[in-house]
Length: 399
Image (cartoon, rainbow, N blue to C red; front, side, top):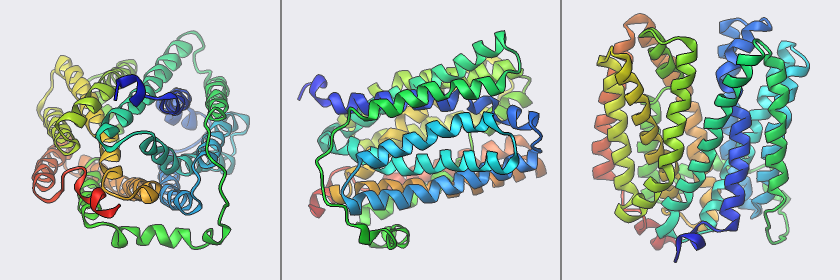
């Protein structure tokens, strides 16, 4: 199979949709705390808003992933998910009442939950197991190009229109709307929707880890344990600030990280298919350990730039690879549920991980936050080496 056939028309469509959506989301992500403070939100209220939003996103990923499998449809979940996220952007600028802002952020997160499992199931269905790393890696590359261009656009825009945050939220609607339009190029055979599953799906996805294949459960345990150590990327930016980076330098470091991620996700996906997704994921954890150890010990600004570049390599070697690995361990009919369940519990655990990291940061010191994460990840590399299976065995035994 040639590269052109592996990255087919449908993969391109989904990848362009993700690029446009991430462009819209990431042009707002770095300025979100500043904007919220400008309209009267306290730091505590911002924390509550983001924590609630992530919890909603997490639970909805599992719920809608299971629903997509039960109904045996993908495209409507993808289209409506991107649609809700697009609409939420201008809502943040129209009114500034706290309840309205909460509603807008909730809509955005429900949109993410609505589309995630179904979209990844579509990507998985477009290729063979031996090419999953390449397809998911290509999608992550395109997605992250949007994450690179979005903050870059925001940085340039604010250079000319200082403090025009509301205008930026309105402008974010344009690439969001483009993403929704592109979804209409996706095709899916018509099937009968089984509405009887609507009420049972929420509890069903919560039970899924206990009913799934053994190899999926072992992988899920490792992935969620890593999520417990891996706090929000905000702490990386805070560490740069702690070591003397200006606000603009932090934003440029974030853009640099996304650039490295975008450039490396596709080639690392190809390599992952060749050497094995498990080996590539463990290699990514090794890079992560180096980055967090460096963050704990380093005080040289130039080395911090290298560490942010390596962090992009870590993300490229793990995020798409993890989903590709999951999709090869479970039957096709359970893909959205399996990935949605992983994303759901990961989102919820990441909230706890960030709270824990913040406590260690405040009560001990920033160095301890990063050192503990590096040590825990090193132990998890051993777990993945010994207790997780190769990428195809369980899948073949279930189909």
